[in-house]
Amino acid sequence: MRSGTVMLGGAGLLAAALSACSSEPDRRCVDRDSYDYLKGYRIVADDNCTTASGSLGKGADADWYYDADVSEGWADDGTFSRSQAVDRGGFGSSSGSSGG
Image 1 (cartoon, rainbow, N blue to C red):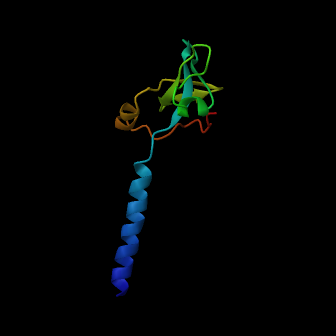
Image 2 (image 1 turned 120 degrees about the horizontal axis):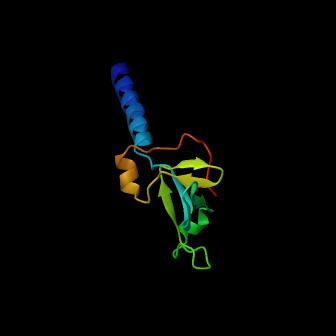
Image 3 (image 1 turned 60 degrees about the vertical axis):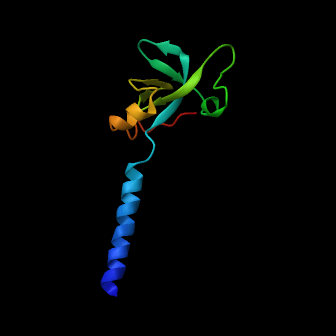
């Protein structure tokens, strides 16, 4: 009985570890029209990417930008393709900053 409990407990831990690895890649909501050659895309509030239109107003366009290097409110060297970010192993930014 005791070994069965250990086996089930170990399976639960393994399942939790595997599900953590399959989490969403790091993403930032950016203004696609704001690209700067040296800085990348300007990070905007996440609400701009969760609305149905994805519009910042004034003709601007917001979208999720995955697995980017983030610095001082700008995101660069990422991708707009979620599947591409997962394929290249992008599960978070080392900068530790959050968008919004």
